[in-house]
Image (cartoon, rainbow, N blue to C red; front, side, top):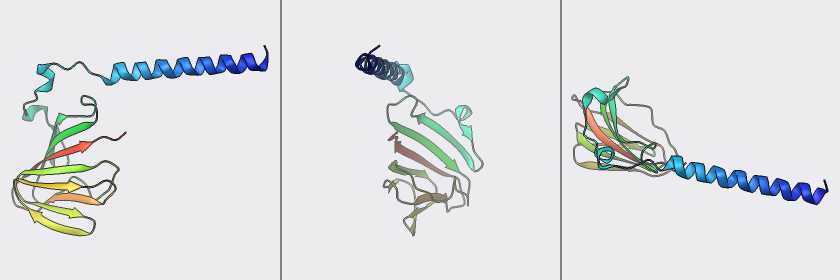
Length: 144
C-alpha cells in the first residue's frame, strides 16, 4: 500500500471509531424518562448509611444529564468530610438543624430555610453545629 492510502485508511477508521463512540455515548447518556422514574419520594429504607448519618439521592449523575440532588442527614457535632474543593459548583439548602458553613477561611452558623453557595474551586465544608440531626439538600452540577 502507498503511504497516502495508509493515511487515508487510518483517517477513515479513526473517523468511524469516533462517530461510533459519540453515537454510543448519546445512546447510553440518554436514559428513558418516564413519569415513574422522574418522581422520587424519599424512602428511608432506600437511603445509604454513612459514618455520620445517611444520604439519599433524589437525582444522581447516572440519571440526570449533569445535575445531582442529594439529601444528607448528619449527626450532631459531625460532618461528612473535611473542607475541600472541586471543580463543580455546589449549593446546600438547610432543611432542619444548625449548620456551620465554612467557605474560603470563614465560617457562619445558619438554620433552616437557608441556602449556601459554594463556587467552583473554592474550599468549603458543612458540619452539624447543633444538638439535633442536620438535614440538608446538596445540588451539584457535574461538569465531567
